[in-house]
Image (tube, rainbow, N blue to C red; front, top):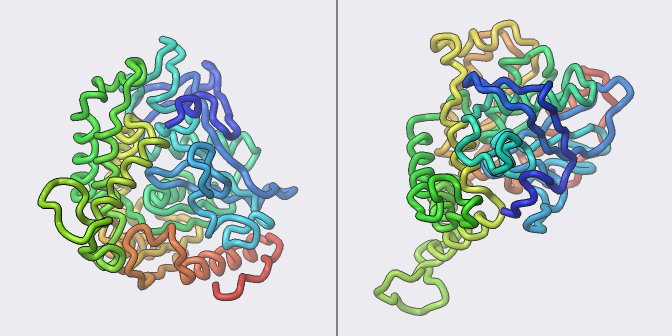
Length: 390
């Protein structure tokens, strides 16, 4: 992670002073605090065409522009951009770094104004609800009373559902992809393995590694390796790597990376530590673990969405075992029970949870079609023609 991005990111920043606190779900108060964001396209005269894109666990605000740390294209350029399903020639798109992140929104790598040192574990634990509260303050800044749509996958989908549950009057349409209304015990378990890997690294230094000039790279890399396995399916791993050896013709009978999959995971781990903060990984995974919409109504998910006038589109993938279709169906059933308007599609894909980030034409057709219909209902100007093959 480039340290300067935590306080002075390569994107726009909205700063809130001591007199503009953010009250967190845990009861703690952040003041001052800031939120980093990117925008694309133009806000129309009646401010009816704004779409908030919510990023997943390891994403950030750089959804459709080159990343300032890696130099790589934004994480969802297949979905967001001119002529894309989320068409920046037509919509005003906002994407913010989540609270607890490390790319400019207040997080554990940010400077604590009370001490002049980085927060580290001194930052209060944040939740998906807190992330959405911070985003709502950003939306307020633009004078937008009601978002045309909130869109996101995985942890981003959790934020979409939180927006629709907590602020239904501010969300005209919601697109939640490869997500759930709560984190499963299996997913909490995977996150705990990752957190323990980070905290077991001697360079973690009880969370004060930035003050000490250290970096728990090995622990964070292992956490990323373990998580990355969950983003793929067995079929996609086998198709891509099988049991192929890495740059050798025979086994070494040692513990170097004999197999291509081993080399691939090591590469994924080491490149991740260059753009992500270890403590942010702890905070954001914990936020996902705590997410449970049904707990607010004693297990009745339908009551969460009772009376909602938001239009919903939910998408799942057949090979996603991290957020399986059964989780999405539970949300769909609850929305039906609440009398909400909901469309649901399960897409046949062998590429696992990461399908929502990959070139899956059916996903883009569905999102484009849903947003086109919703835009027509809201009186937003018509779209450009879809690219051939989408």
